[in-house]
Length: 295
Ligand code: UTP
Image (cartoon, rainbow, N blue to C red; front, side):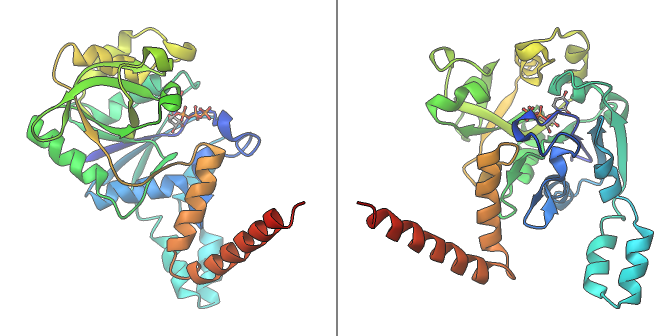
């Protein structure tokens, strides 16, 4: 059973500048919910109740989002806006711990900051810019694989050849159960050097022995302490597994991925979908006719 989840949120979000200059990337909203809330709900849907956010500079808004908001709640109460009040209040009832990463020294370093919280048990890591469509059960599937194998599990996705440079890529073989036994991991390889097209996406079930490795791991690609490098060392010491995810994931830390996620999730929103669909169809018609009326 996994009881603890870690949400690293101390990165600089450079792919989304200028929006992320003074506001956390994790607070960018998809339809009406910030990215980090999707990840938090995903963990809680798996029964995980001990949550740690790794924060950094300019990240105050994350703490405020999950804190009580007296003035707002009071105003909503007085106006009798029960549904909105409920929506706001349910966020205050989640218990969070926060640890500050003193500088964005890399995802591996951010995970190492979680050591005093995690202590000695396996734990989940969720990167909130990777948004998993809430209809999927990726994290729950990974938790049951980790329990069965008694080993760490990373989520994988089959990525396009030209995109391997954006991911940690694994070398491994699928077992009879379809789960990959990982031999080696490489952070952001050149397409010519990639051992496969299986890229790591932002969901991990880790074991506390990762901390021993992270404590002595030198900085890797981009001068950052890379979680992929730590997992590569770990794979030399014990079995590490990969679970190939075939459902919908959005890279909402990237502008194009964010736009895709916004459109698809808005189309699934009960209240917004009809009006939004009508708008999109009209837009496509205009695009189409202007394409055909060009000389
Ligand atoms: P990313 O590389 O996707 O996020 O890191 P980033 O560094 O914020 O964004 P870009 O690449 O500059 O646009 C994956 C996750 O790890 C966290 C980020 O907040 C994100 O959730 N992270 C990264 C940390 O917490 N600390 C770090 O030092 C680096």
